[in-house]
Image: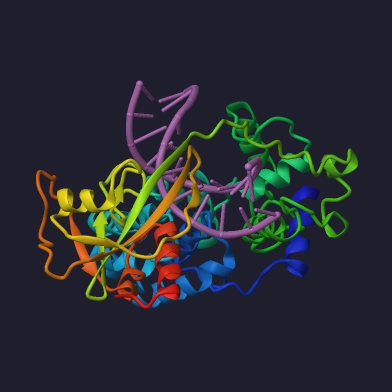
Length: 365
DNA sequence: AAAACGGGGTA
DNA sequence: TACCCAGTTTT
């Protein structure tokens, strides 16, 4: 047992998290679900979704047989809907290609959609006790500080180094040592995650209570604030758009976005160029007679690659309007829906915010 | 306003 | 393989 893993395992037993809903199970399906939900989403947010999801889809077959729309409805509000789509796709692969049994080892797990190297390793560790290295954002931060790794961890060279570290530091295979602790790989893996989430945090790390404080290069050199080094900055282009809140008899119009590009396949408010005049635009595009309603504040939504300034435009649709379509448009799927129902389908977060905000300010309709 | 975050897609 | 992309929250 090397001292690094020994320290972490013993820390985990005393100070780690032990009562998360997906701990204390060996069901690979439940563990898989938790790992996917935990990508890019914090524990506290995940828990209620995780429990609801498992109730509705208790096993992989139930999930595979369900319509995608039902899956995305359960996912609604969690964001990153491609995770939900991949989850559903993977469930169908498991039922179609693996007789409905969750793949029994890391190599096969990793071939499923939505599962990369780190996620596959985490599932294999917690479900099967396989001895595999994980390397998620938390682990990268812990390692970058502890070993004083200079340079952006996403860079190829550093990433290779980090993966090598991650594998070297694994507790030794069970059955080989005298002080082998049972469940070592699980406790070790959980320790790395918990340490990154609760102690070795991005800002204000709690170094005085860290089990690695004696080893940590960043701490010794007073560089915890400098490591890991941030991703190189790029200038963000700015774009602007108008989102139309078309109201008609208490319903609002949503459109399905194209599968590729921003907000792919999500339900969204109709978009209009800022240069257009809303009344003209709606006549042309939808064949609707509309009247502008109360002004709303523009706000920014930041993507990784650009900043989008959104101008919300509420519009009252004359009930006499023809609502079945305008001229020359490709057929985009669209639906009138009550704002309450809209919040239950897969919508991007700025649209969600807008609906909540508008619903709070005005009674819909 | 910046940083993070893990996987997918494409050249 | 080496890029670049997407979507959202936290700090």
